[in-house]
Length: 226
Image (tube, rainbow, N blue to C red; front, side, top):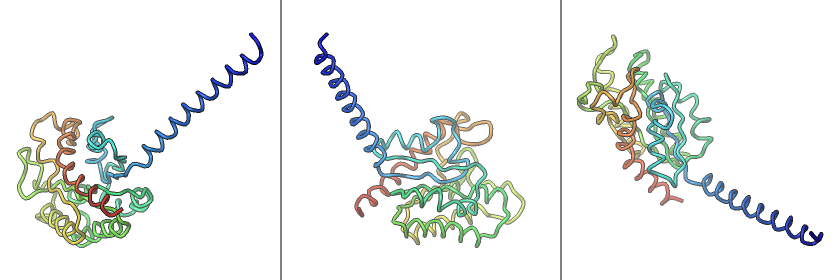
């Protein structure tokens, strides 16, 4: 084969490779510049297994949004406050879902005033950074059919779940946040729960469905402010 034909073939191949790399880069950039949502919480945010967390279902319903899961099992409101800068503010999301308080209720170690301060600190910090906030609670006005809403299982201050619920509602109102009480209320069959008492993949699909409309409104508000 003449040398010129060989060189032409190599040049054409390099050109096609560069085109493919350029297209891949543009696709990557498009995905990485999508609006971000951070799902921030405890095991209720991290549970569900691979592709079975509520954040995974939110991501499927919001393909033009990058959903980031920052749930750590066992976290309390105090733990969330400690890592809020690194796991939320540093990521500069347009919106966030915060789901903390279940472990504070279970342990019953700190005052209601301290719990309120922690939640308000995080929500205030987010709002000052221009982040829309959705507070997702695991307590409600009435117990869900599975009995997991206001059942007081610990020894200590009576009615702590109801007090955490009130903190969430008042904080959402004060900082103009989205709010969902008892995000687990639709988990009424045994297969919605895993052996550890957390929502299963099926359960988290229902949790995501409850969060989704409130989160969409938060994203719409974030978009109108850009």
